Image (cartoon, rainbow, N blue to C red; front, side):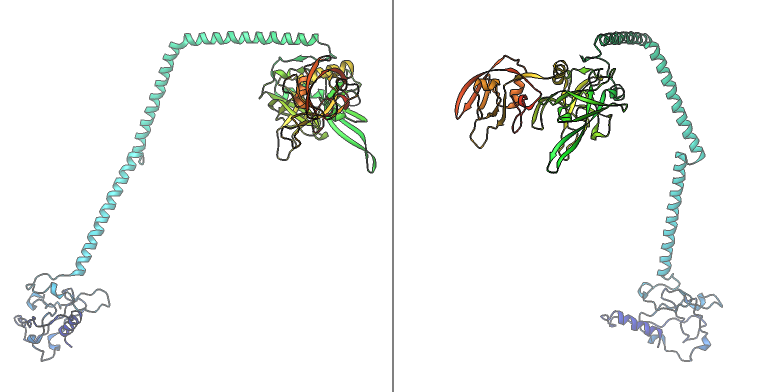
Length: 560
């Protein structure tokens, strides 16, 4: 089949709606001079450029009779230039896209139709290639520009040797200028301020000399006062130089001892020996030791271990269950002892050091803390103690009876208890020196503690009790031959007030009586079987070594 017919068929397939009614038959091509009529036209590629891979067919090889050009339909492929325009001996070929490419039909015939003879033929592939080359060249130019800018910037920032040298020179110049300016400024300021500096130095030297003189005088006075005191007694002091924890431990540890006790206890299985442990503080050079009453209570054998490991058998001198204090004695002389400090001068936040025998096995343990609170009231073994010191210094079982020392190395508390609730730490208590000092003096002088008492035991009644009783102190027992029995008080009487002070608890009554003396008269407001009455009672001294004459609170107090 003819190529032109193939192309016509393809165009009809792509444009089925088109008709050939407007198409005029193509005029026969003019034969070039010297070319016989009927010479075939060399096919060209779709681009209109002679196919380089398809050699021209010689005229002699063509069939003798070729259909006339007039028989060709319109929209045929573009004809090749006249033979006269072709170089002699150079066959016209169609271009190839690849090594095995075949000539393709030109589907873009309309773009080249009607061009004059010899006009350049439109080539889409070549135009795309040209555009691609131009883009690549523009991209290469942009890349070269960026590289040039980068190199220029690096050179300005020190990327090159020349740039680095320039920056180093600038930095060095700036540093030199700063140093010179500072030197000149200091020189000028020194010249202007020298008189003031010299004057201040003289004043500081003068103050330093005065301070050293004052400290020296204070130290001499303290030494003199200490030498005037008896070695067998204790005095209260509140002056001195603040000491470090290490200094306090070094000076006080030899005055704190470990106490081990044995007592007999009747059980279901018979008599058993119960052992206990605690701490104590040497309060005199001749062997008197202060501790808690609950440490040596009911003890049948008491052994004291000194800080150097020396052991002594101890005897009980006096006990007081009201204040939970006791004095024991060992047969020893020239012992180191602690001086009493003034607990009334303590402030919350003041540093303190605790020394004792925790767990009964760790003698000489030192812990430190601060005063957490003052004038606390606690209940220990059904005994209420008022005005105790609260501290966060670590105190454990076995520390009872140990020392609480202030920053001047003075004894200001006897450790007595700690809060033992699960999850609670850093809450411990100590009996202040203002409480134990007069008790110790009585014990050392008389061997007993005497205080004005009423001679009753009782329990507090809350205001919102379910029995309808008035708020006050319920008397549960009256001691024989006591001021209470002589005044006519009986069991189940309720004390609702004392001297019109609104005193209606055992703790308040104890605190109020602490400031009274034997022979003082109290006016009690008492409710008996629903009837209110007033009772006058005169305080009397009673032995405080046993429960029968002690004052405390709890579910049932020990005595008032």
